[in-house]
Length: 328
Image (cartoon, rainbow, N blue to C red):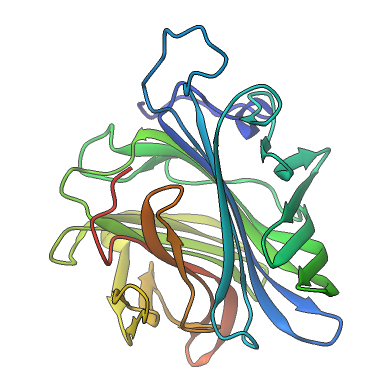
């Protein structure tokens, strides 16, 4: 992939099966009618494993689908999560090329008109949510070409939909509650998103309280230093795109998982452009063990952002590669 190509919509809302890896990532904060705050996550991954490409059988695993869903609930004290995996075949699992529609059985994430809809009947909980855009697409990097490493091909096509208005319901056990809030959607696809020396990344997507949006990331090497970094901040005066020198992550307090022993910097200071943000989690235990599907363990958590000592926004922090190097 090279910069300069133009993304085209609605086509690029759909899947890109010639690329190796792709995901649709929705994360958000919602509030129940009783005032409880929850974090919610719905993710569908598509993978081209480059096997059985010439096999004419409909059962050949030419495309694989994975899905993760989670609720961060302070009353529970840890992440509730579930996951699914399937090869793409018949109407059992797949990802449409014409528009956003990914599904595995009765789990689905789809663009219906202008609204994204997630229907996730998971084990122990269920999500039935609508995500309505309130702002234009935010193309990351150079018009959607997002560099992830020192070489030009270490990149992805990447756009975000910040400040999505969320409505619908969350069910935990037999308790169903109507919810409303704000969410962030990332759609990203690539064939080589990581340099060989990268072990993982840190990423934030924040819906700012003033109506703006902030995305920042860094790719880390084994020593914890940044191999590459970038991001963007949308504000009233336009969008500022950040390069590697504009973004800095400074890990703070760490939380150690009682299950894996992995230690994650769940509090973080982030400099993006001329602004400093401090991040703190809704709850510490937001580790997601996806070894049964994507083969990794990572921390994906609802967090609050502050700037200048004042509340600045709410979003999600993703921490990968802290237990073992991430391989995509």
